[in-house]
Image (cartoon, rainbow, N blue to C red; front, side, top):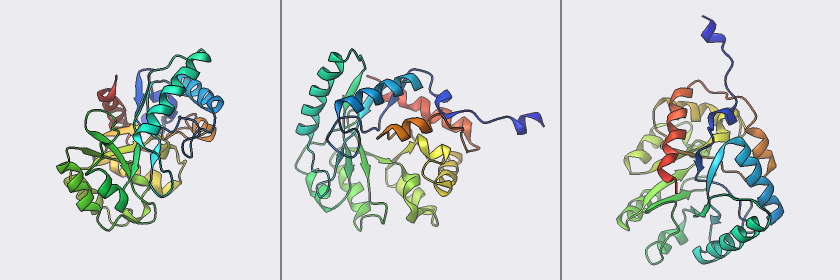
Length: 245
């Protein structure tokens, strides 16, 4: 009976110091994440204190909003590494991208090489308003092109909340799921936390990420979990060792 009333852990306490984060927006001035190298430095230091050891940072590539390219991201990453060294911040930092799935992306990956998390694993997202009309064609063609799609924060797509079978359909279509850790403390709202908990219970997540953009996200790591399914969460966190570099 006592275990029923046991206090839930703080989110940061689940990161043991060897966690590899595969989703963040730490490169300065390139998207809606860190704006300056000063902000990048503060975010990286704070994340290291939380228990994140390695970072694969993932700036947005959305042709109509954030028209980044692998070349511009790699150049920014190289400069950022040098500036972090100048600030005496030693951190394993790689760069990939978070691709927005739309008509531009559908044509882009057929002719241009994508910036991946590791090997052929590519982080993708979609609109919070609705899924792309050609979503399953995009996912199919992406795999034909040799990539494995990792869908960022599936719990945050509200249009799937009333039709849970769509999540199962995405998994059957070969899509891996990346959980946003802050979804578990209510940062994005109670509904999203409940859906994340259900996806954890059903064993549907493959990896996790911080999706850190700014200091408010950092602060949320000091909040307690608001979910029931903590055991599968620990396994998902452990799965990120796959991306260790």
